[in-house]
Length: 76
Image (tube, rainbow, N blue to C red; front, side):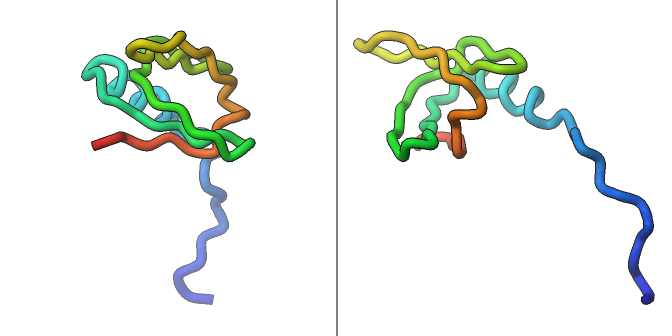
């Protein structure tokens, strides 16, 4: 077939780290939809391989396992 490639897409693009760093440095408010369909909002203060820490105004901060997050999006 014309236009097909035999090379596979990379497993990791490392864009997640760049995106989370941008959110953290710019204090962008985000909302996370979790696997139990609940949603939480906050600002990404810290992240590593397994966790994201959301700081919330007037509420306790949260450490979320990344495997418990369906998706994360910017609010506003």
